[in-house]
Image (cartoon, rainbow, N blue to C red; front, side, top):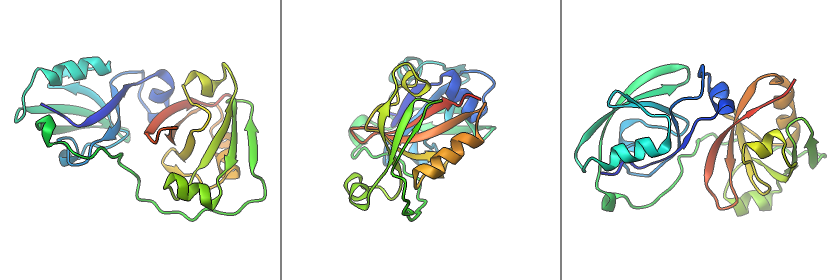
Amino acid sequence: GYIGIRITEVDAATARAVGLDKPKGVMVQEVMKDGAASAEDIKSGDIILKIDGKEVNRASELQSYVARHKAGDRLNLTIFRNGKHIDRSIILKAREEEKNITSVENNKSTKKEETKTTTLTIESIGLTVNNLTSKELEKFEIEYGISITDVKLYSKAHKQNIGKGFVILEVNSEPINNIEQFNDLIEDNKGNAILLKVRDTVGNILLIGLEIPN
């Protein structure tokens, strides 16, 4: 059986960013188009806490449990979403039924604002970011975002595996249009954790928790 999701384990920063009391469960990073999960209201950013009543805290635990089932089997998930626990039931598909792999994108469309400042370094998290030109937005096939041009070694961002060349798309589900907006959100969230939606260098969409120092 095939569930049709890409998952990662939940670290302390991500748990704090989404409102979990401690790191637990696995985060849905990507939902495969026309897969079993997409048919049952499973979304990018969901935290799967249990499968058939069994706690899952590692990606391998969920993967091995699913692998022991066949297409047509029903699995029950307990999910943490927007501060609430919800239940979802999924009927597994056969792997050959899965076709195109695409990330679930937020349909928010926001016009990119023109700004004079093009580069910003935020020492507290170890990131240098740039505004994207209209040509770069077209190249990446996105409507908004800012690029990461440098990550300081051993910084908060570096420890969360945020890399040079990534594009920051959203902070706490808010589309990022320019570096000034990003800086304001960092300032507003000092002492807290934020959830970044980024595009990595090969085009994968990732959700990453990042703690912001005071």
